[in-house]
Length: 136
Image 1 (tube, rainbow, N blue to C red):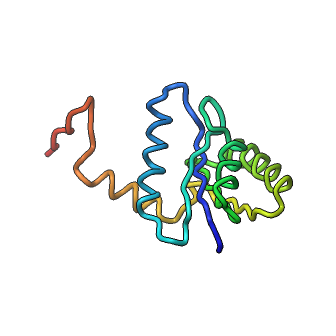
Image 2 (cartoon, rainbow, N blue to C red):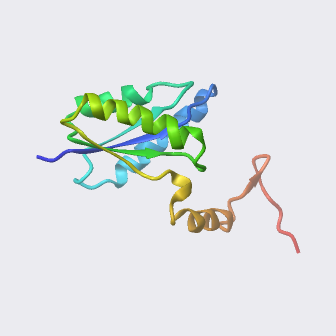
């Protein structure tokens, strides 16, 4: 049986609440997955755990024969262009039995502009925890 796992890779933060936010996002993504995705995990580039190699290893240990790595980054800086591909490449070379596919980063998604507009125009914009007043 084919087992595809999704690994969402974020930067990581000293602020644990930010890391937990990414973990909650993964849980939300997990609830949307059909049978074609056997698992959803998170990994962090730095400042939080699990690391990218640990996240990849967790997917493999859970039975993944394919891991789709999704860089949860808005811009293609050094982390997206170099650091993540290097970590993924090292894992793939050490685990040839697992197909590892690196997707484009979030910021490159054609769906992102529409998502930005949807959020911005939803009426839920906050300022200091309060809804912004309507302007004339």
